[in-house]
Length: 89
Image 1 (cartoon, rainbow, N blue to C red):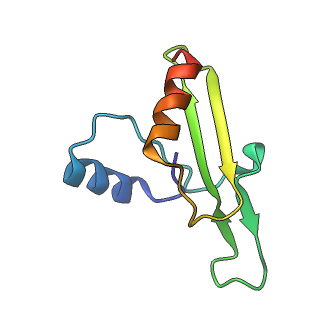
Image 2: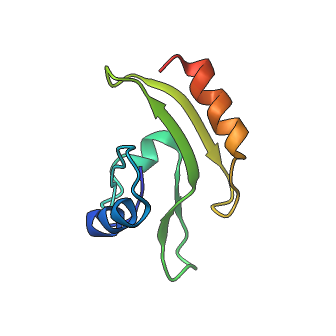
Image 3: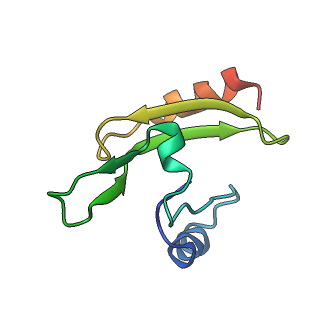
């Protein structure tokens, strides 16, 4: 899930040849439900996404959520792979 526009996500997918399904929440409708949206009237962006990781299985069940307080923080690849393995998705 990304707060980027669909066209930006499509460009990323095409440039990186990724097979994962990436979704857009450009209108910021889903992000508040997962506490993954920052609203800051002092920021020029005002509403921006936190760095968050979700694993959703084939039935659409959310199996893993990790929301980081700082959008610049990243999980290590091995953490993502372990979360995927543990989720059973």
